[in-house]
Length: 93
Image (cartoon, rainbow, N blue to C red; front, side, top):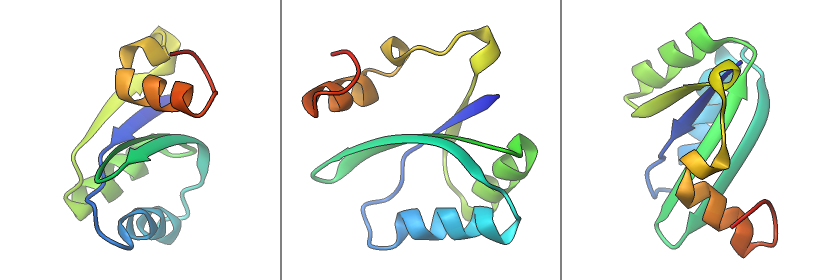
């Protein structure tokens, strides 16, 4: 499984636009975690089609990072998401 980290712009509909681009390609979001505070945030997600997700994000001009869960994925590697979850009483801080 490949996880993607995406930073969306602080505009209404940014998340919907990203999700619609995946839906238009019949790509299912299989896991998602995100955190936002004021105008900053991060979104981590996994899908059923990594190659299609790469293509969708590239077509949208979204900057993204990939993380191979088979090589180990830890919230410690993503302090913004980890801290955000801790602020809501979830995960570790």
